[in-house]
Length: 189
Image 1 (tube, rainbow, N blue to C red):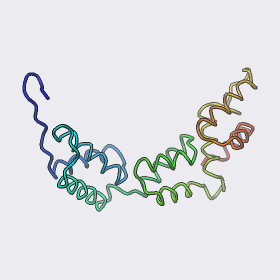
Image 2: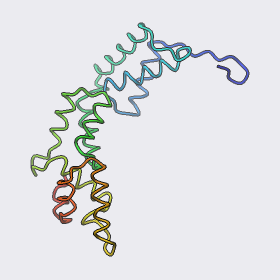
Image 3: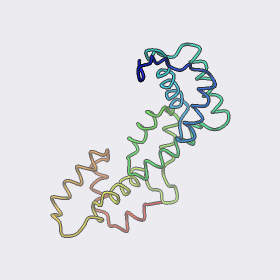
Image 4: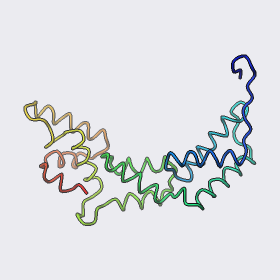
């Protein structure tokens, strides 16, 4: 690769570089151990000639850095999963999408299942999907939050279709859209 008429050699990868890169990344973003491993592998690929995969030595460095970050408490899959799941629930994502997102981010299956199962607010005994549906309806101004004076029946069909595309079941969608504003606000934490 050339850079302004000069030949460009990728910089060398070292254990110190990977540690600094991990700390910089974790200073900006929360992460799971597996996600941090993927990020560091991408950084190594970019620095290797011709985007070669990491060597065995580089994989060892990556593993050491991830273990070190986990040992210091910079990376904790359980707290990361809980924070990410709560944030997605507040955005109105159904539990299926939350589970899928956690698995994509490298959280283990058991941790993801436990986290999603614990999303239920025990005081109000409401299911997580009901909370997500209420948040989605409020954010999109559907159902009781809809502006008055519009074609209500035509609008309702579009709202049902939108919620179903977002991953909510038909029964939950119609129940949520038929609820009053007070009922939905009582569900919110």
